Image (cartoon, rainbow, N blue to C red; front, side):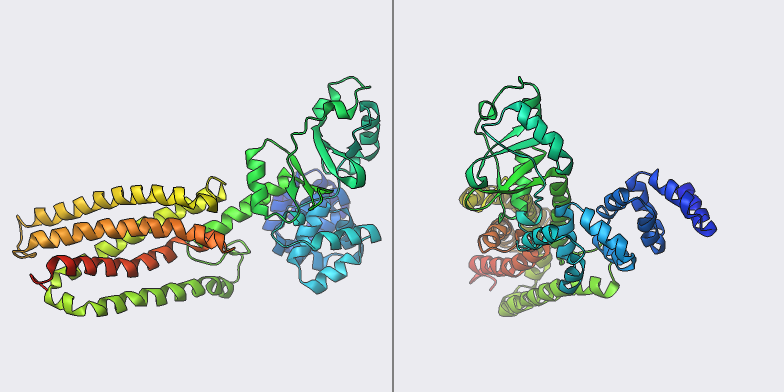
Length: 456
């Protein structure tokens, strides 16, 4: 990479545009993308210099902030070429990130047909399948034979996003089936398309969430899937390359949200420091206010703590155990939901599993907590003559807190999904804070129950 950068810098210094163009056009598009990262000030120059086909292929793999910066510095002619040559799905993804006025100016560069297409695609919700689809596909009629289909592919295939799959449509564009190209190539030329149809059609709805599309692709071995409307009319297709991008974005957002921050819309090292703080401070304030309730809970039991100071020794142990079990459960359920392994309808199955696992985990920690107090009585009398009551209080409280943490951590993501919110919002820190407060209430309630009339 260093050698490549040095060569490019030399050509830029010599202002040898012909050699620069030859050099760039012979590189892999991923190498050009890296060059733009290494020499961001020359990014617009590289895009201007590249042949239009390669310029488009480089532009479409750049992250949005880089795309936006470059498009502002390109000549009007190059902007028009790139916007027109971008595949419809990539163009829509780019437009959807821009401000409305910028989109209006760029759409003017499009032909009337492409302009209507872009506006139509932009009419779908930001996180819907409609934003990913492209109308460039091959559609045939079931009455055609293979000869006619192959002629049709030769004529229109170069404009299609993929010819791996051919779509069979009926009256008014209703989707009937999809057929892989290999099935067409392996039969006699006079074979009718209707003879190849098997009815095993998998399609996406234009208004489906993009996350649903990720799961459909994951569960089915497809390179592309058709997109239909409410009347089953074929609108476009979604290809696996777009799904891989979306899956990566969704995974990144979920990890950031699970960590207790808003999702970053730029790479960590590129985002402005004040925007980074803004993304983090909101959740920190919410969590801080939540943790304040631990002081309220302790204040309510202040009399009990004064009478038996030894109870305070185990507060960190109790709240950390509950928070840890809750964080574990929420992370597992969020991941399972993202993979399509768990749905909201299966909440009762999840609850049953967490009841059992939470109880077993709580018993394990409770026994260890009791044994710790029992063992310490051989070396110190810090727990006094009623150490058995202290041990039972800590052990049983741990069972209750860990069980409650597991239930809260597993149910909260499902509840948020049911309410239409992002399950990843039920982040580990959020669940831990919730369980901290309620864990103290459980702990001191058990203490009052066991020690009432003895030490309290």
